[in-house]
Amino acid sequence: MNLLQGFNGIRAIAILMVMLHHLFLRMNPAEINGVSSFINNLGIMGDLGVSLFFVLSGALLSVPFWDKYFNNEVLPSIKQYCKRRFFRIAPAYYLCMIVSLLISIYFFNRDLDVNTVIRFISGITFTNSMHYLTLFPTHINGPLWSIGFEVISYLLLLLVMLFMFRFIKDRQYTSAFYFMLLVLSMVVLTHVLIVKFFPVLNNGVAWNDEFVNLALRWVPKYNPISLFSIFLFGIFAGGIIAYLKKHDQKKHIKFDWLIVITLSLTIVPILLMNLYVVILDRPFIFGSQDVFFNIPYLWPIIPAVVAVLLLSLPFSLKLGKFIDNKFFNFTAKISFGLYLWHTLVLELIIKYYFPQYSVFEGDNMSTLMWLGFWVFLGSYIVASLSFYLLESPIQQWSQKTKLARGAISSRAVPREQSIEQSIGDKLLENDFKQTFILKPNK
Image (cartoon, rainbow, N blue to C red; front, top):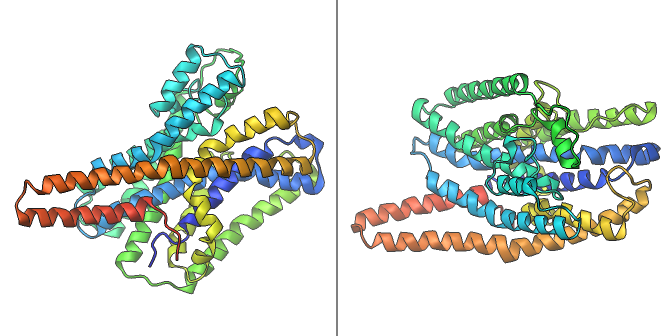
């Protein structure tokens, strides 16, 4: 059984939602109505794709830990975990940060001032989430804000797993489930305290920077703890997947029905809400709005829905294979590049060919679709180059370096110890393939 069945599809849907969100932000809601308004509202709700990404990452990265936990094995290598995460993210992200900085200076006439340098440094050190002035680490590529948040979630996952392996020693699912509920409660409480006792103190300063002004509306609701509360739903899903795997759960139609029911209970209300907004001309609410505890992205509804989908798809008979189609598999493969580069492509195309489609200024849905075609085409080309020329070679080099060091070190140990170590390396390698490399079904 492919334990990642359906994950490619969820990843592809997430990145397409984010790209559509940034595209439809170009429309002026006051200039459209009827069907165009209905479509535009749905497109803007694509910001919920960020929630999909966080839950997906939580599930993917936690499964190897859960496997070891339920099988009474030792904690997976923390060094290898950190190394793989760094080499998966940093090279392409750093390149995009540099290119974004240069484009903002030479094409959009941004100044290379102290604030710009500080924001850039906060980006490359993944600390941009610590202050509203650095929340968006570049002037022109807004989506890069989430990278620092996700890296902190990776580290918090390690902390949670270290604690669970150390203190929840019975290795039973019930104990682990209650422990995770306690962690979620503590995380939500911490977020509530952050919102209450650390408000933004701007002292009435008017910033001539659209991203700083946006950050002022986001902070303190958007903080590493609130995003980790979304990430935790993926950890829950990863635990259930590992539990079902340990108990040899077979594929069954009941998981397909669970997916259908979950999607119906989610999509139908969203469609009805948008229909209500269009017909009665009510104010539209973005998907990033909070529902409970000032946590964004319709928490906990959307994270819970995504978690149910992720734990069901691997054991479904039909829907997991259906969602992992060729297009979604390819989109998932280059999804990191799509996320990094699509806004740069969008901004450059708008600057030189669609200048009337700045944020909330467009007035024609047909023109927006034409703009979207070129943005998606350009983004797929750039992301493919990023994957095949940078991301994939670096991951392969990282693996070869690890294997080479293992071969050298094996010469200095007894044969029995060498065999044991090679078996351990193979298990880690399998964990890596299951967790980080999403291969399409054949």
